Image (tube, rainbow, N blue to C red):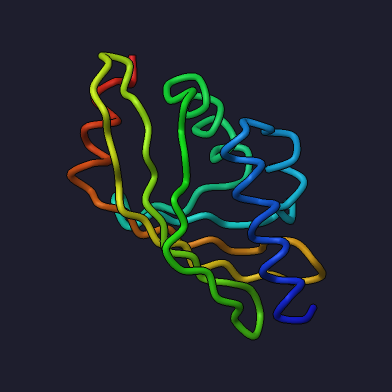
Length: 128
């Protein structure tokens, strides 16, 4: 893939998350992909991550990814963004995030996500 291909893929992937198209998100992952978050240090499988994404889509229906930086890497991309939404209690919420994505054969094989743990905690408080 070229740098332009990685950037186009990143936009498609984040667009699918933003629109809540979980089938399109799943299609971006290699079945054996691993997803890691700095907030808990645990690697997730695609199936585990999709369960979280289903909850996320229900909990934050007005989510918006304000992309600050998107750059191609030799084998994927890095994106820095601010996730903005309204929490279920009606308060506005924002969380700084960065993802580093490694790809093989046009699919994500690893996604490392770095996020503001304080803001992540505010969101997790709505996990009921």
